[in-house]
Image 1 (cartoon, rainbow, N blue to C red):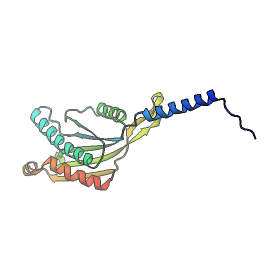
Image 2: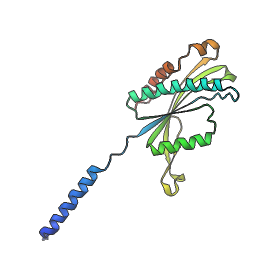
Image 3: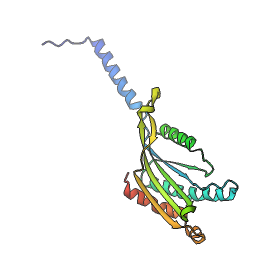
Image 4: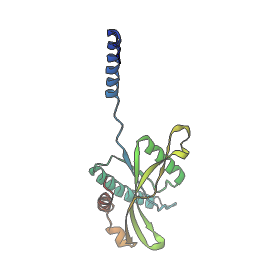
Length: 188
């Protein structure tokens, strides 16, 4: 079998194109690292009591901020979001959350919340870790959409709902402790 030799100009052109392709590949920005959205929101909306809403917002901000900080310290690329308790449009909130997750290339959501369950006379602090899953059925022509999968891990604390409990619980310290437990359960 005989091999054909390329004329020198053709060989030089092929080498130049190969070098250009290698330069283009090296110059392409790396894909951003996958992230996790750490979403916080309280659940106790007091329609006529702005001060109570502000209190729940502050409690959830402190709790969420510490969970996000612990995850960052563990090497997780975190996007922290905290919604006000008055942000009650569930469908709109989920759509905005999923759009943000897609834009930031996130692969999961860690939901944080502290709320009063008045019916059970309980103060609840909860962290849930959810995967984001490609929803190819709903993607249409724009590629796959995201949906929130079933929770992988849950860390929850329940306290008797009393005035002394409300005075004693420190949301930031509780968030740090519970986040460390989540990290142990769900190594990243």
